[in-house]
Image 1 (cartoon, rainbow, N blue to C red):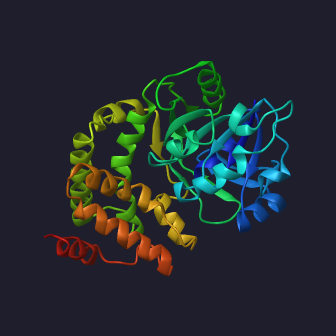
Image 2 (cartoon, rainbow, N blue to C red; image 1 turned 120 degrees about the vertical axis):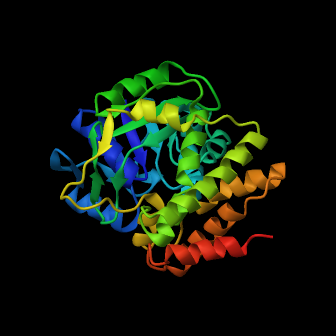
Length: 334
């Protein structure tokens, strides 16, 4: 198999680098400054074992790569960029006939639960992946992956449900790369469970890494809304206890220099000044389901709106005091 990693940021870079270290064939797909950095200097992957530079093939558009039947497409862009990426890659020809959408497996290695639905409109073979992988991408060409002894845990399954031989073959390759990959028939339950945890991303992006009680309390308010919405929608996410049991003793965060970890994916997007953030597909997913099922979601609506404003206005990540964000939330109450 050859892994084509579409979106070589924190998750894509960490997975791509680990796959390359295990001897797998990998092509990275990136844009802008990240593409230039990877093309000229390679991917610098820093883990608790040290730093390694991987000189991997890199392209900045689908037309620059010829696809074959042995390719696996790993989609690791933010969900707000999914539709454009899926449109571009699904129509690419595959050697021997047909298109990528018709012939190749596509894995959605992303937060949220929307990309799988977008992908299934364009690809016949879609797989969901629930990603637990502490990684940071702030500087072009460099990804920090602080998980140890495993780099990440990646639950994998067919979308919407089920497993197959392809999933098991992909999992076997990933597990040789310090990436535990349980193959599960209910991968979206795992992704909905992760979604509830990711409701904290907007808080972290706006106010900085969560540590104080006020931020923790605000997250619990957002999560309580999320749980109520999923219950109303008839969705049964994997719970905190089951998630913790899978991770126990297998992955822990180990800073490289004794410093605290930076923020998660949304904080990193703001730090890079991308102009967009994935709040519409995290807190916004709860808002959407709440509107569909008649459940009020004022906390998640404020978090979604505020994170988007930070991205649009390119405000500094973590620059709003927690008390100010709590006040905005409280002001939303009817």
